[in-house]
Image 1 (cartoon, rainbow, N blue to C red):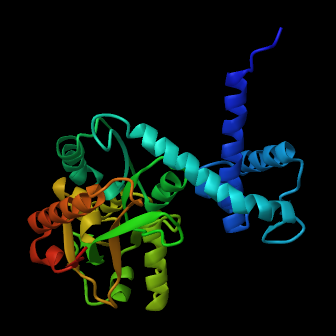
Image 2: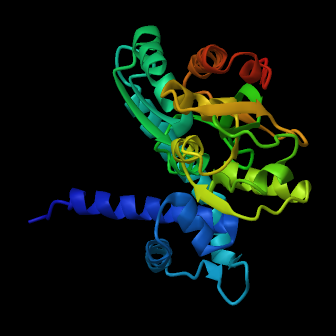
Length: 328
């Protein structure tokens, strides 16, 4: 009697191979297991196990581990030529399957900067459902590093983020706006505001942590203007930063959109132009290329309009003058 193939077991094995290829591509790109694991939201041991499983499946060593960064072997180079194509084909299939239904986009997964998620979520859901007939919407609020992981692991179709991810292929990018950083001090602060150095002699600097894109941007800026704060408090959410400032615990540098939630909650903050060299960041809509039609462009337009409206409402001229609108 002929045995029937164990389809479930085979599907599981194929899934493991695909995950292994995904990890393999990340290691080939970064040259480091640690960086690849972080990029994919895995532990280093889990990433190593995926590579070991892949090497066992093909009976070949894929990386020369005697050098740093790790270098592809001949077998690794061969796999590298095929893996990206295979993963893209699988992703195309998954996308087409998810979009099966009466409308072109039936399931949608979005990543949004945490600082503007509350502001944008109702409009995004309404646009997706009423404007494009989307059946299921999943939203993830987080930092740009979270968006990178979501996009690389294909767990998001679109992200409204502060990093355009130019090193990632297969994406379309739509600039929303560029915003300048502002000086934010407690409402009751009456000291000098003409220089960051004079302020930091009276108040600690409260800023985003170096593990975040905003934190690294501020660190680079302070180094550029040759300012070394005497005391620093770090946090990884704008609400945590503004909460400390409004309680008189220090001062900070934030953009208008990073301030929206705090001002909506009526936190007692004093917002002023930055008394130093200009520092900016750009908010961008990043989406998988040619998968969502004109939805990314519509999201860009809606995001721009809503953010400008909110900044103008809660910060007036100080906030709106810090915005430069991008033309898509």
